[in-house]
Image: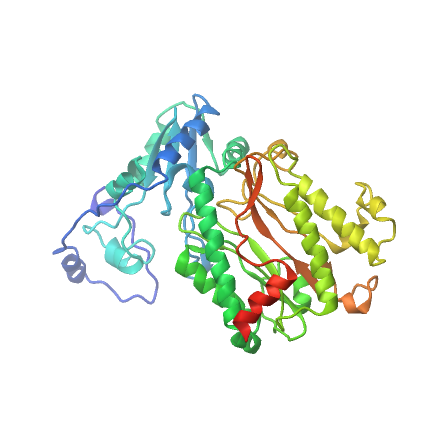
Length: 456
């Protein structure tokens, strides 16, 4: 593309003027070199994934965009994160790229590093090398991913140059469904990525508890920030906005404001996960006594939730229905709520599909798939996911909870404002299951011992 047809660099009104003498000087005198990038471990896996995807749509062209930057405020963008399906089938994590799959073969159309023959590399705030950092060249991307890579400017001609039926992931429901369903079962490399994310998440929880003096001083924000530091140090980011619910905030399922105090005598619910460099994320929840020791009431409620979680985890095995862990956990919670005298009917009646009154205090499902998205494979057909069966290699959360709202007049006053959730990431194995986040203590005694070694 000639210099005359290059788009204007993205600049802002407050940027200094650039006279031609300065621009011409900046376009000369630069050395250049290609980076020798090792082949990415996902390269061969992604090739096989593309073949499987293409086989579901024979004779069709499939288009999977990576996405581009999204504005946070005025002229500042959110940190870019590639679309999950694009990354899964290509390995590419750069913005403004598009994967095209046809007859089992893939071509990645990418936006490479800035050309030194234009103003982009020193003026463009979004793509310029001197503003945003060096993007990889087409050759570097190709060498790393083992994939043919062309300039994104060639994409339009590719898509308009044939009568082949084209499906675009951003608008085609069938393509989105198949792309989700192909991710349901994880291979050994993916399981390793998820295990690493869980291990880093455990360290993030330990960081938070080890800094308890500042937690008590600064509250929920300090816990959120402490965990984020670990996520950025050992991974790409947090996998989702951290939920840090002290006291009554724990009864809001997705409390992400994280602006409250951490008060002695109360509980704090921490739902947090590290997203690794290849975008696989953990999703772990622990509910901790702020004093390091549960009160008798807190311990009894916590043990009830733990018993429910244990029942849910034990239900995870190949061939089990996806809903089996939920049913097992809810049976324990319903009978526990009945023992507390809270249910308007018997526990068994409350569990009936046409009743579910117990759910006033449990609110949510017990499990969701986990992988590159925290709620992974969300476009899969119900028959393959929510109404389907578990298979070896699937990874799902098991996360029952009890939530007593502060203004719930149907529970004793001492229960109001208490929220407890316990969540772990469970791999379906050939003969049952494996808890990928087991290194983080769960039992009341283990939690108290773990906190005691760190906050005193």
